[in-house]
Length: 255
Image (cartoon, rainbow, N blue to C red; front, side, top):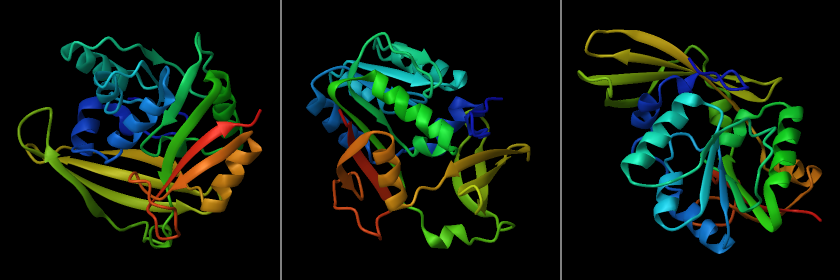
């Protein structure tokens, strides 16, 4: 079983993770455009199974993938090998990474920054990103825009969130979600109940996501030495508003 720093357990099985998230987010074109604009090496933090790493490499990006979860990286490497792609995949803690090269773009997609709940973790992450960036380089990331309706959900309520072909074979996997918002920690604590229809086997895994409210996120970037160049409300680059589901930030270190 794989846990990351915040205690999340959802990276226990990389094949289940891929099946759960298929067909995936709509962010590929956005991050590909950012990589092309960077005109230099790219580092993806929390690359997972290579959902973005592989298509960016296929499009010509000089990209490195970094993750702390060994099962995710193992599948990423296997997928890259099957596609005939040579991609450096590094197992490391994004808060403490000491790169051997500098990057024109560092990005962190799919709400991954929300795994860093404590101030010390966030300071470590931003400090690491500064070490990784070449002069003039950018840090791009996305997180949820917290929705009040989710923050007051009944913690005993179970809602279906996924129904997919079990990659282990033999039928479908049903996933139900419990959601409990920790007001003191400002963390959404989710429990996902997996039920394999073939044999009725069930198990529970946790996912913890720090919630960043819009003005707080701007302050977080500022006080960690980054200037926000642009802020979008989706991956089509729509202006950010209070109704947006996402917060997508393009930042650059302040010299």
